[in-house]
Length: 426
Image (tube, rainbow, N blue to C red; front, side, top):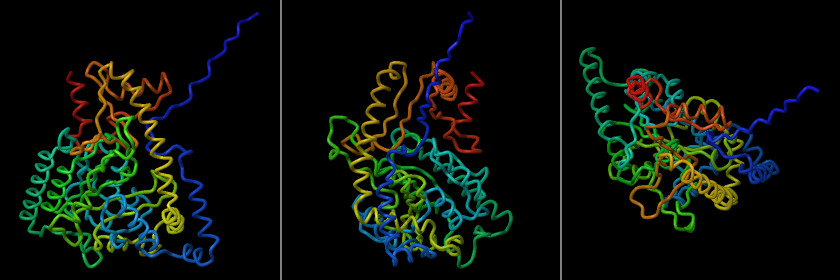
């Protein structure tokens, strides 16, 4: 009789690359309850199904302001809140309203960066003008590098204006619809960063705001992981978590010298705590900035984005269900998973020379971790991360992100280019 070959079943895919909650952590039941409350009320339904106010559902603006005030210990002001349809679309709207591709000089992105932000900047006309600013262990950002780039860009702009005889001023975005155009954009994730898991120190945040004011830059920070924090020590109580440093938008708000439009925009989202399909977020900024952002063309025409879903989310916040979902399910689950991951890394990877990047907020006494990401550095005697990731996928059906993914598109001084050159020359 002939032999029978039985193939072993394929290993299930383990995907450690995704930056969103697993389906069982979606706040579906609370969202359903919020939807029922709205749609069972004739008046609420009528308000939810018309074009929404440009700045967003008024009740949600108040609920978000109250919630953020309780988290960051800031004064509550719904005038500083503009509702969005998620952080990604909101970044695009900020660029539409507050940049001019013929005047705004450069886009700076802290590197390693959230790479999917790059096409948003490219769509806004900034191809070839995005620059990666390296992270630095102590300060969090290589400020010498950033300052040098800012000074060079200013000198070049002044020289161009002199040579052409044209004023150094916005060209496309002019008139009453564009009362403020920034010279620079600095994009970053300051707390539990995607992907490095780093948290900028308070000193670094203050320094960054000061630089932004000096050079007329807008700091756009994705503040989407701040709500997901726990102590690094498994034996520590959740109550021992040290408050992360104030947001850039709070520093700008309370530091003397804040201008009408400010120099910061806090880009928030419910994607990480409800589910990414909700597509509801917010911007916190100065009231003047919020008013102008609300008048972006698409909102002027179609009303507030994600208006219907915004009414559901408001009910979740107003009832406390979302806050409880974060406190009672998300944080305990992510904390448990983090400890399991770190235990495995310490047991199997650290002996190979792999280093875990710390994400302890500087200027804090208690090591606090959080967010969705862990960043590992390979030793020199191992292949580059791209090769290791390809091997893991092929041999073990394990998908992991690798460093080259998180570089700034088109930046010839980026870490990806430098590493590639180093490999070719070795």
